[in-house]
Length: 310
Ligand code: AMP
Image 1 (cartoon, rainbow, N blue to C red):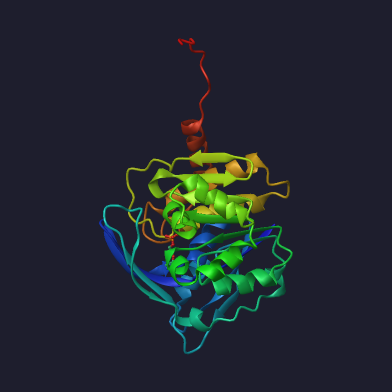
Image 2: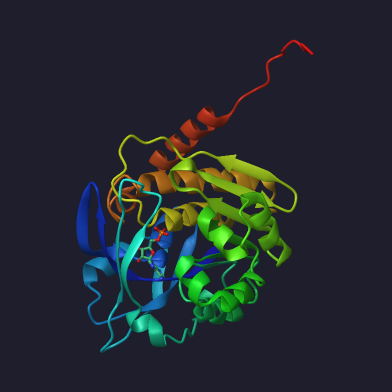
């Protein structure tokens, strides 16, 4: 199964209470692709500018990631994001967003990208997500991520794309903001009423919850003692989650969806241990499986007989 992703390909300048980096490799499509490539082939769609370096390209173009649809726009500048976090690492504060080459980008997908089985519309302008969605009609599973900026500035377009996808991944505050529903379960149900069969509510250090038409499943985050930079955690979660769904060709039943949640949670936990893509770019598959196993041990329980006292 192959995955196509459109999203930002970026330089990020990030400050957390534990350090800072200037113009490191980032972007929603980049974090997603590195994580998803552990499970399936990924085609990345998006533009970069003249300032895009060979080192960044080499990190992105790891085995399993096709960069054939990464377009270099001469005279343009690569997407740039500057943000910081205070001790509450669940909240990113955006200090600067420069769309650069994304402002004028007209996606023209290659045949290989159009023929994907699974499509991930990572966080980027909803109009752009829609134009890529229209070119991948045959995808059997389509998922989408977004953020507060687009809910604020392009809500109508965002709702239009949501109506065309199978799964929406948003953090819990964004879900409330999108639907105007204070309760998370009601917010997810409202999104489901627009078309998608599943909603994943990302809850930062508290984990993630999957709400479908038929069911509910929740996992805590993997408990870490050291978290340096949460940037990209959501996209890395999505890479593990969608990658797992794309890895098999059977039905996407409850068991597969739960395993996908565990892999998303695990990939995200590696991502936050270091800055940007530093940790995930040298991650090995056995480390992932070991942590998924630990997560399973931590979260499974069986009933013990108790007296009925009343
Ligand atoms: P997250 O997984 O939510 O932490 O996403 C982090 C990534 O989102 C960073 O690498 C940024 O480059 C990227 N990003 C930030 N703002 C935007 C935006 N408005 N559109 C697309 N990507 C963005």
